[in-house]
Image (tube, rainbow, N blue to C red; front, top):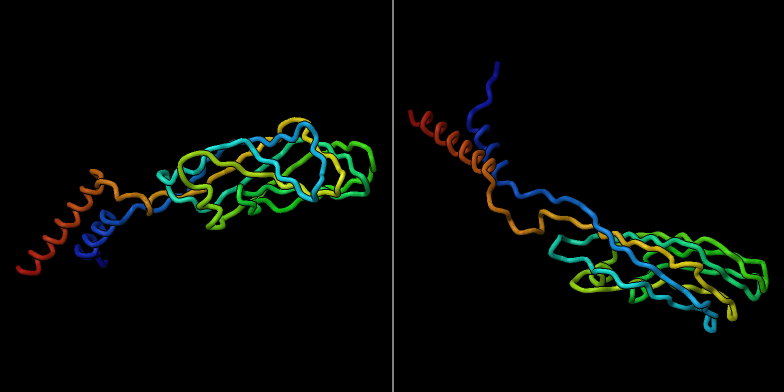
Length: 200
């Protein structure tokens, strides 16, 4: 039966002891709301509604690589004609995070109740940089409809932003743990033993 040479065992022990920590993905979230009350009338095709503020992603935690946003609740629209309302969530600079969702209405002049459900991801470097740092930020809900339409939320829309980030490779090298030191010692002892046998 073939045996594993001590030099390979020693080299493996050294590799494990000296290997850098592996990157690990994780996520944290922040809550926000969007309120449109009293009702807003579209005097321009598009209106931006700001959310409440929330914390930016703290770069001391790790490296942000993706964000995921949700926004949901009930609202009402009074259309002036057969109409389509377009909604999406964007960063404070106006870059879209969620894809556009379209709501169609045919009850001209009548208030229509409907539910809003928006979600989407964004990994644009500029947007990630905008949301990274110390302090507060916000997102906007962009709405597009025909002139004269009125739009309102029945209660604050509830939103959440998920910060997806990695830790490990970008973090400072940690001090060696006792287990790592033990592996390192075993590897050095193995190499010393092999060297003595070769010299004998």
